[in-house]
Image 1 (cartoon, rainbow, N blue to C red):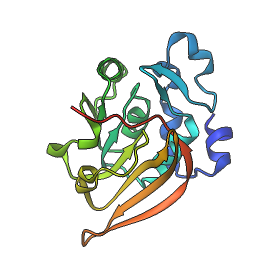
Image 2 (image 1 turned 90 degrees about the vertical axis):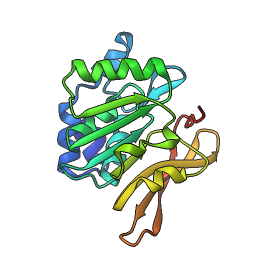
Image 3 (image 1 turned 30 degrees about the vertical axis):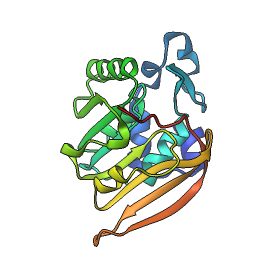
Length: 202
């Protein structure tokens, strides 16, 4: 998977490739889908949500420019797979999932597999995790119509936020937002993607 679906398509960060290699993707999908775990496609995980295709997980993590020891926030944790991959690079990962059933299952899965530098809670991800901020990187694994201001506020200076943004259902543009040292935000379009919608609200 890593060689043929990820490295061959342009992801070259060694930390990312090593992290993708060491996380058992089959542990994050339903038992009946385990024979498809390493296909380069999203798979259903319940509640109308999906586990993202391996390439896009790796691509977003590389785009976030995560370095060893970084503090990372993931919004839209789903089954916990991306948080597990992030945890093999970052110093700490704070993951937020809006759907209680998915969040509880993901937290238990991460604990049982030994990803002890991941903290996951069920909450409105558009509000981030203010008490754990600032973050060196924020990855939003669901599409919204705009980047929530609360997430931008929780970026550290020189921090990077990756998020799919668009108004047309599940068709979005993947944006990279960097917060400069003086507090300004610079935005870059990384191309078209398709993600499930970001769920907000109390």
